[in-house]
Length: 226
Image (cartoon, rainbow, N blue to C red):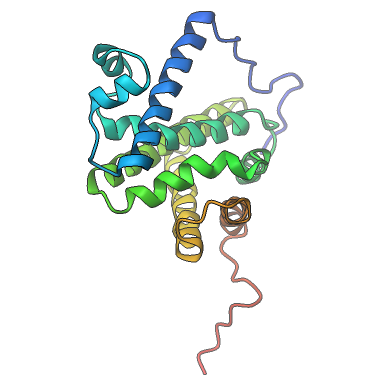
């Protein structure tokens, strides 16, 4: 890949306005209220009105942000994935994309960062509607990864952007993320201790490493069928 001209890193984004910060705070309050109700009542046992009351907003305001209770809960997963994407965009523009993806997860250093997403993952497994919203959040992130990678390649003058590569890459990254979540839940179940969440974070990082190595089998995985 050609060298990027000096000073061609991804441009810094402008600081959010007060209005944008207020909207983000309201959105977070709704998401937090929905997750708290999910913990206390279980899936399907509360309404939009319950969330609105808990967040001290009107029903109309709720629908300015989310289309359903499931969408409000799925925003927990959106939040984690958006944070990872933000870290990805901060990586050096000449760094290999998969290394940037791995480094972005490393930057989310506090295991508690993944706690809400991990908790929601376990709770969603028993509810088809909530599970579908979770899958939609991951699918949305696939599109975001495609755009972030396209931005990266656009920095190289004269480089043809291969859509197949972008879409296969994004799909692979998301599939690895889902695989890490599945393995973590199989190992740890609903355990949200710091040790368990640290395991999840490491699994996410390791999954990116497997993708970057072309899925070279681990040393302890024998291919001998005797």
